[in-house]
Amino acid sequence: MAALAEDLGRPVRAGLRGHGGLTAEVFSDLAAVEGLWRGLEADPAVLMTPYQRFDWVAAYLGAGIDAGEATRILVLRDAHGRARVLIPLTVGRRGPLRVARVVGDRHANFHMPLFASREAAAMPAEDLTEALIRAGRAAGIDAFALRNQPRVWDGTPNPLAGGGLPAPSDAYGMLLGPDAEATLRRVFSGDTRKKLRAKERKLVEFLGAVEHRVAETPEAAAEIQAAFYAQKAARFADLGIADPYAEADIRRFIATATAPDADGGAAAIEVHALVASESGRILATFGGAVDGARFCGMWTSFDTDPELGRFSPGEILLHRLVGHQAARGRRALDLGVGEAGYKAKTCDETIELVEQTVPVSPASHGLVLASRLAVRLKHRIKRSTRLWAATQSLRRRLRP
Image 1 (cartoon, rainbow, N blue to C red):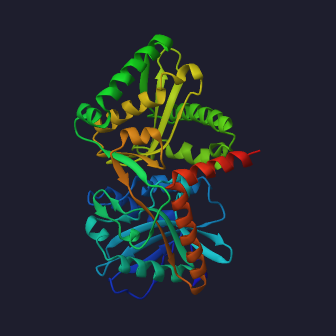
Image 2 (image 1 turned 180 degrees about the vertical axis):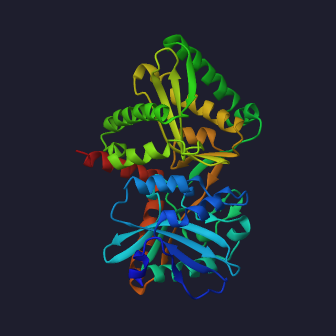
């Protein structure tokens, strides 16, 4: 079966239709499924996260981040031949086993499938799991390791989260309203807004006028990214840890994903900056995966100059970002996975996440057991203030 999956552009079909009437197809070439994928994206009924946009996935795979892993795009069709679910995967070795993961790994905050509609997402969890297993057998996959599955997305339960374990950390976000000013008043307390206005006045006295910029050309995106890389490098150096953004493949991915598409459409990743108007100095940056309805924060950075830190340029930029996203009509904004003070101050929504592992071959059951034990241990450590502090202390002592 595994050899069949190597025919680029030709779908492998799991021939037997399951109890839910789903037929599985597995593609190994993005071009072969691009038309279908973009058609699903463009349908107002689609239920998806920005990390499953075709352009985001294509930029990620094209950068070679997961070099050595095979690309597999799983499409599930109903009894009428309509595509109901699409899941982009990479398949790599974990010991003797071939394990499939949703494209993006730790660079994507959410790994939910793309559902053609809310009706499609309402399928029984067991029907979706059965279809995954049949597709996995056809493609030579031993197990699916599906991390960061939202329990609920845009008010709709995710069937792939059923039976999974709570993830070590959740994500945090907020709903936006059609009135930008009203949204800002709701998200930021009156005291917070007052403090930010005071800090911005002092920042202007120190540096001159500042402005919020959104990159609309590859050149503007590259300029903001250069500042981001420098700011992150300084921050990681202060912490004594390796800089993941120094890798060439990560930078290729970001360069591609932050450029508008060939037809002038929205980039897969939108980048923002707070800039000193006269000097052009970039004081803070923010990048996020986007679609028409949502901004998903992927990173943020700020100038580490202590003289600037007292003005909180990152918080000023976040305030501008929230207002900008509401004004352009997006319905939601999230700040990604993991706990942080600035998230606690601004977010009013907890996006519960699940770690899901689906065994396919008999040999994979040991992997599933080990994965579940690891998730439980990480969850216990991250949710315990005492254990997490001890873990961080140990890491600091072990750093060179």
